Image 1 (cartoon, rainbow, N blue to C red):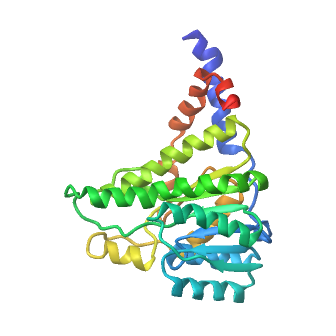
Image 2 (image 1 turned 135 degrees about the horizontal axis):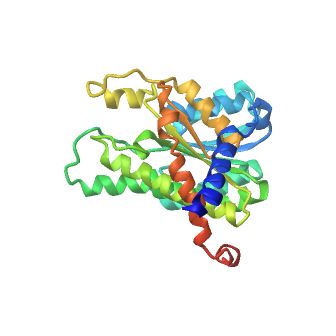
Image 3 (image 1 turned 60 degrees about the vertical axis):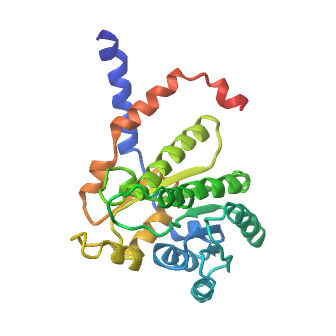
Length: 292
């Protein structure tokens, strides 16, 4: 007890004070000027809006999704808005070979990579889980495993640029929601994997940031159709959401929260978890991170 009063509590106090009150850098659109950015799931919704924001900021953009026709329109609009360059590569993230090759092709088109924004998902239904293992497997492969494949393929370029990985997730990856068990599992997996990798990068001095974006209900056509007749709540703006995601990546924030409720950030940002993660590092042999 004396040790806790003398050492542990002051240490935790300093940790929390630093985390909550340290000066935050302000976002400036010029942070993205000339940057080389990949956006997945960019044929519509939040991904499309992120592409347009990046174009206005003067970034180089490569977008991907399954619909070539939709991507052509997105690229054309990006060029109209002032993108330094804009390209598309159509394909399905169900194909892990495509996912890996896509990153290499995008890197060649732009001459490198500064930011990888992972935003795509496969079709999701709101219904009770009925033992559909095939559907569960597909969701885990597209919503989670392809994110890992893409980030692994992008890491060499991101190390060279001291770049960023931005992972678009959901409140369903932080708290339990009924009717979306497979989707929720994929989003919890993103948190577990990328939060662990972020810690590994930090200890191993890999200067690549990872931003996990926790989104509430956003007014995309896909989301509105999925929740129709099931949820009675107002959705947040996809345009504003897209901008907040880009800001979080540019500022290298660990997590961002976007939702209409002012309580979301306060209730989901878990200081207890952060403290335990910080303290648990004391039990590791640091040579493990250096030698690997």
